[in-house]
Length: 312
Image (cartoon, rainbow, N blue to C red):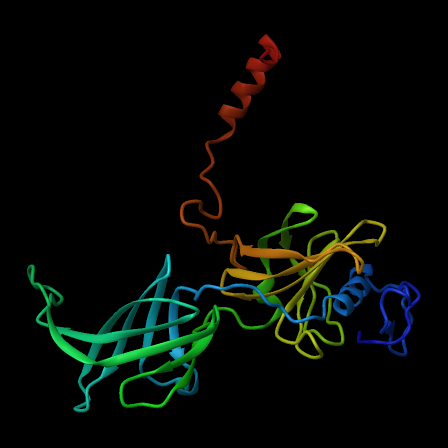
């Protein structure tokens, strides 16, 4: 099933200038959520622009990602302080590592790239490494929370990116529980949704993942003005569009906009993956499922309330 942006009976010409219809096919039997995804794409088409912080994790020189061993670095930013740990090689081919610490100001940081030796090795007792000097300064300028540019000592500036090795831009990556929280003139709007099934692709996406009753769905946009984003819609059981969402995400976190209608004010959106597609929790403490305590506790509570009534 494919879709084109033309005239659709469910669209309001005054509200959605480019309209939508099914291409050379009847709309009969098409999930209503398909139609609402396309309509939402029309009025969420503006670019996203929000403040950002570099996402902690493994980063790489984008041009050096070729599937073979190479260099890379870990970045962690807390309260504007950046710590970068880099693994690389000496001119002799021996592996080494560096540490840089600096303050991020206006999405930029320059810090000394120091190396160390004499520290603890596997199986050794307590040993303290010593500063072995600096290879020079490293400069980074971030263009988003997952991309930027870096200049190493004696090298030209090159593009860098957060290394995403677990989630491709495919429908299955959207499977699982998600929270979507937006705040703005409408106040706080929150949704908790479990995406469980692929109901097919729209013309500009690669597969719409929906909840069980097909009232909430999300799809990676792979073509058109929204390419590179995830578009979601929430509809009523009668097919009315309740809210639309447009965001980008990396691993478990995302940001973007949400909108109740074409005439409403955009809300700032924060997105969080709660479980992986396999149902494993992504939080710091809570697991995918709490350990059950068996039915006896339920029976005891029911029996107690039935005998003594609800607490006053």
